Image (cartoon, rainbow, N blue to C red):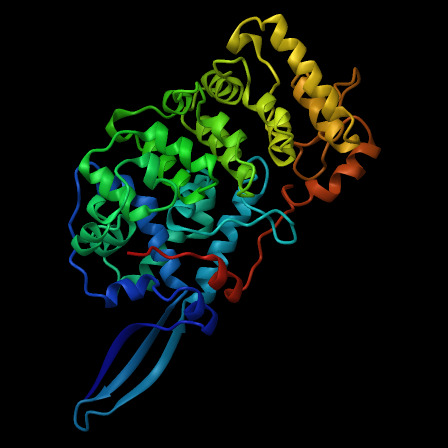
Length: 432
């Protein structure tokens, strides 16, 4: 009599073992005690995070079909199914979608832009906000993850891993042990604390998001944005983003002040995209993005003007690309004379820094939305469109040619095509 046994086991590449000493299956091997579903973060609101856990787990999953001889007790391996290659391909497709216009939320292969760690919450943000219904059908993410991990990761396990929902983890990340007492502290990078605080009823979402983007903590920013997009506590995303701290700085202003992480470009684009995604009405969508981008602080500085005053070139470039303005009368009212003089002085200093910076500041000073994507000018004649994505606009073939060295990494022809070793070094699995 022959019995067929289906086994799914943890099989890591050498690179993945080096990078993730505690990976998804490593958490299972720790035999932790799950806390169960919490009413403030129901499973229905964690669908994409749970799917991200499963997808990351496929990078370390091999399914083995073994034939057991009932008489002799000997096992013979009949076949193996390595899901890591398929998982890698699906991740490449998701990241490619996020990398292309209009999102531009991930560096395409070949770009010199700093690549953020691929975490459960960033991946969930991409799946939640970037994938169309057509993409879901084409990529078959849910079907693949179910097939590859169903013998090991149940919904309860995926939920526990995504929410760090284990009693031992909650005890370890206790304020008595020096851990955060608010999102303002924990959103800078401690996900177990963020979920502990969520279960405890913490509500300083605006402060958490501000601190996350100020310090370029992309996972913390993705966590807060995901919760707000799921309307936790009935909170609306855009009003939360517009809340100001004691100095009058809202979330976008904090992102403009990130000068060291290398992720300010991504923080700004995530905030803009989340604001756009938060409503389906085109008029409301346009006003939400415009307000989030251009709301001034107590001193009259908009986020774009603040980045110019700091001469923070990466944020200046990103603000120019997403359509920010140095000052927006519709959002902030008439600017004071003293503020306009300061703006002119700052712009004069930037214009002297060369053609590339001058092009960026020209786009920020424009009053029209129809601008050349390279030089920032608004010509009288009709702008030419990029033949691939049809979103980038140019006043001449010369500008299009000069811009292509950067545009090719966000155009619809841009790709993320990385191998398993790359993912092993750039995927960060949840850690207790």
